[in-house]
Image (cartoon, rainbow, N blue to C red; front, side, top):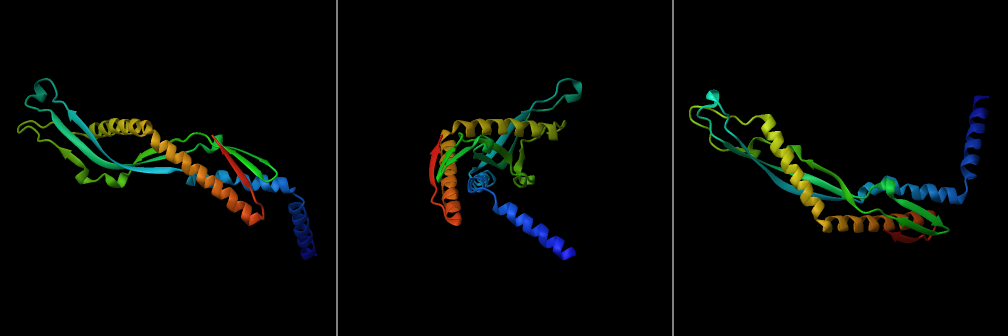
Length: 192
């Protein structure tokens, strides 16, 4: 009895799956592009230096302090790619039209492993009175350096062009390979 019920459920499931239209299947297959396109990004690795000066304090307590220069060397990664929410896919028979948005800066992050004891370099302190560089001073210097790095990346239009071209290539190859596996000869038209 239990086996017959299980077989009936299985048969109904197979019939439902088989009754999907080929257009719906094709649309579902092509929509899978969205899940793969995180590969359509460009990663740019960079070295950066955060430089700053901790000014000597004022007043009697800070008597004898000197300005302390310091810098922090580190590495990071900027990811450039396309916003998949803005990708538009339309099909007509075996013609697939993909409208690709312009590449954008997806993220810019510090490689935390690159920050170590050798990354922090400080000028000499005063002999009698110390002017220590604290964690807040370091964070502020890194934050400023990261903003400048982001501006530098954003100004490099060739990086965005490269990421966009790579996205086009990967999308076209993906659709053609998808067609091969499903027995279709998709004709891909890419638009910006």
